[in-house]
Length: 406
Image (cartoon, rainbow, N blue to C red; front, side, top):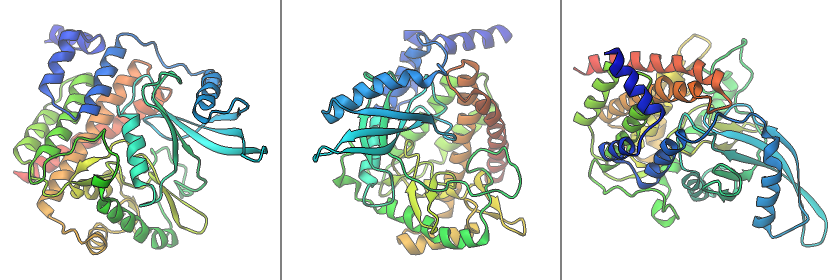
């Protein structure tokens, strides 16, 4: 058994073309997802650990922006790494550019770039398209430029405007929790932000995605299970590509998710990571940006509802009652969403997507985060090791939910 385990791990660490072809055939996913997952496996054999010296970014960034703007006399100043953001490398910088009147203008921008391997392997052009589709519908940063394959910047990256605001308000005590996990919002913040949080989610689900350029998203047929089949394929594939060891509860959960898969009647644009920690608000308590659209896809609105109300992301109020995304009781969240969106809540479907949510968290934290930390493919290897604890919480919750479903 130990020899089999060692052999399997050696294959995952240095996947052959035959193994890559086999895993692609076993777990069908969307075309864009297949491309980034396959690239990840090919690069696993080729790339060294993450380079922590980000001063290397200045020269290619200047050249890239020169090409994009058509201006030769530009400058890039004050490149700074952004804190937070577990899955991608993020930096701010000042772009100094000439206006049509000949004056110098400085814009503060941000760049979002793939590490060598990510805890969530996603497609930068897909994220770029989704952000453009959401722009004008809900508050998001304006995306400006994209290097989808990393041909000029070394790794796939997008550049967007930088917005000022607060993501995590001051917490009552020193906390080492990851952003969005068990956050605390004071009553006045909850009162001001909760309704906005729900209203924006309803607007996301109402976006007429058929009128947007979303060519990197596969369109699932309505009244079928296709949307869920490809999403489950994504997370099963990620688990089987990245895990450091088999786990019977993960096998049980994948089987349960296949056996109980609901039909998606009318696909909507699903954010995929809608929760506290992924929105920002201004001093006048207006939500001015929704972040982290990299997991967006066309599917069932219950998926976002399950994720946003998940116990793992719940934060307490003053009486230690846990709140959906730290903002409001779950029943209030769901009722408010129904009223804002006109979409009815099917509690059997909601339960399904809650199980699915814990499965995703377990894949991210108990498999991929450990893989990239062990391989030194991320600048956040300490955080990735820390995050693995969330994966085992996820597996424990999966086991409880599966037992309750029997």
